[in-house]
Image 1 (tube, rainbow over the protein chains, first blue to last red):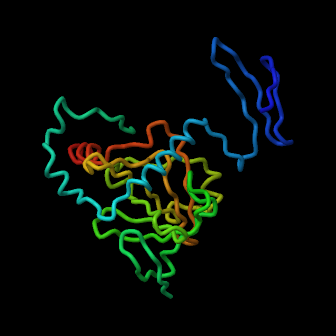
Image 2: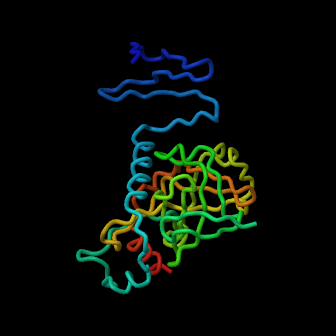
Image 3: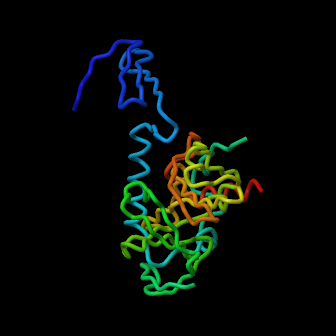
Length: 92
Length: 150
């Protein structure tokens, strides 16, 4: 792995189209600025890894016969699990 | 035009050519799988996304609006452009479902929606930029909430 030391305001180029600059450093957190063409996707590593992992889990778990949602709903207590259902964030 | 395929849930079956989908980049974690068939499951509201390259790989899908009427994938417009989705009518949206042993705990991945251009049958998995959407939404709980709110 290539390791480079950079100060605030300095940047690196990856190829000739992707620029990553150090915008700010506070404690153990580094703020990065990324300039890249729109077809270059930039994600936090953990988001990408979580989706990959969930896809693998979904493929491994997929049963041959699927549950009936209405049947499952009827089995559940209409007031939800003990302690009440979690309040989900709703879009406004 | 029909074609004969092998499927994980239903064995050998015939599908129409229109059910065949191409994911040019595969899906995350399965980048080598590019050809799929979209099948209605015997149990609505589910669908199957069956790999045509590896019969043992099949994903259970659901329309996220079934349990989250407020869902919108909120992906980078460049990702829509990549599969030539120009109007909302072009787009089909599905979430991949994970079904654990206790199927009442099944979850849907709303952070990584599958987007399909229904004109061209080309699809991709995208990453939502909306922090509301995670990879494990418990379908039954959110469905119960949606119905209570309705």
